[in-house]
Length: 511
Image (cartoon, rainbow, N blue to C red; front, side, top):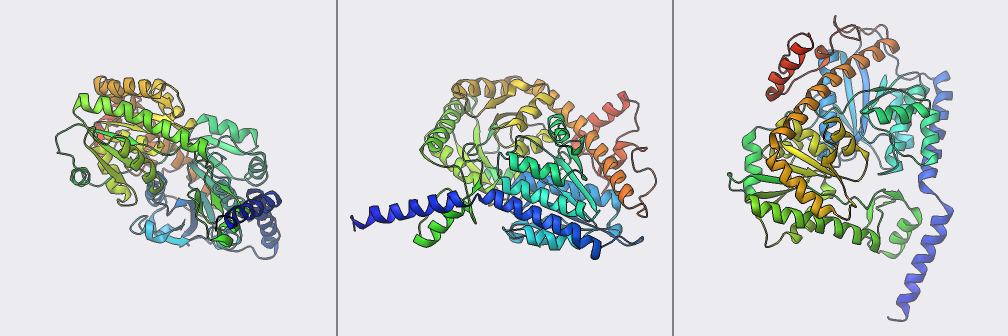
């Protein structure tokens, strides 16, 4: 056995090296997607596909990252759908959404048809977009290589296919960042006829350099209404909270195992030899992995544990380790081990709780430090004093917009433990000042989300002049009339904001 093992390992490494060098799977996927978009252009001349007819419901396909129990991705889309239903009217729009796993999105996205999408998607998108009147790309990390080129290729593919058939092609509240050259080329070629509403100015600039029309918007999670407070309280009490202690929420991730990259050779070696690989994500995709990644992750968790242990004990706080995506369980459990014997601690993970319960639990917290962007966004309307430990520009941009850039820490900061301890204490001691900055940012974001609705109305009208919206919608109207809801606890702030700006008074939930 001992003499055979080196030979087996050598065979595996050789298979990986030969096949991996021969096939760059990300580029292969991009070339395949480009081929289908070019074919769609030719097909459109002979077979236009689904065409809008006046009086019919408008068929829109929502393309995002649904079905992984990523709370942020699901909340974003939930609120888009509610806004679209409010703007169009249920009788005038036929919404469908792609989901990786319908079981994980069961009970989400009311009135919307859920369509399972395969992991190898170019032909699938080619077929399904042909049956629609338009595509709305929903993913927040829409155009960037930080997480996975395949995900951005998915977004570009859907948008490009819609554009190839002269259909509505919109990106709603997405972000553009650093991209590999091949992905940049794909965006430049196939998103030129689309309209992207980006959630920050940096993204608008990136897209502009690629020749893609983009306008400033925001994220779409601001209006989310979680389950009632008693639900979130029960979730935390089931984990050991006494219902009285201040709750310190921590949302860790593994910042260092991104991007996910396709590796066909590695996957074939797995299948051939029946081996397991902890870095395997799914299909032919693998996380960044290795001893260096493990060491960085351990240092990140150790720094968080050091700061949390000190502050939680001093403040008499209960620590809630919150996994906003099912994948975050690994980081949460790793941090829990490092906190053993310290402050009382519990786990709240999205593989066990739906998005309504997750955000309700966040609302019960006194403070929050998160490496997940949407944990911060969804908790801000609830007044939870928050800071971030970031791996990219999203949390930095958010904290800058709040006027609190110092509350964005870096995941690889060698002084993370000391800086986090200072930040945690500030969240407790300067809670009101932090909350005031958050409230101002939320109200501005709500108005911007209304403006996004105005821009969407204009895009639909431009593509389909026979589609009729109710009077008052569009760029000549009031942005607040394009917003489906204002969270109850924010209504007084919104009223004051609008009064100061001479606008109409704010309302509550509109549908």
